Image (cartoon, rainbow, N blue to C red):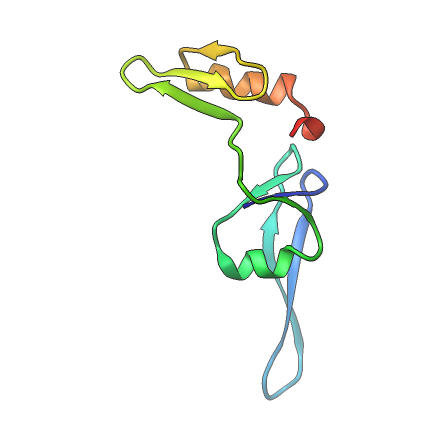
Length: 100
């Protein structure tokens, strides 16, 4: 599942110690520079689903068409690349946070 939020946002989880009742904070997740966080962990999904926008199907921005030659296609605009680095740079540059 892919969650959408502010870029570089830290999400904290607050826990209460059983006997002392002291509160402690633990980082639950960190959104990337495009404001996306992708996870398959059911515990994190249950905690974040009520508070953040989410995409259930988890559409990945890049799709590998041919493993032998590593031809990668952008799912949003259809450009093809022969290198994953070029494809990721294209996705960061051309498709900003709101293009999902």
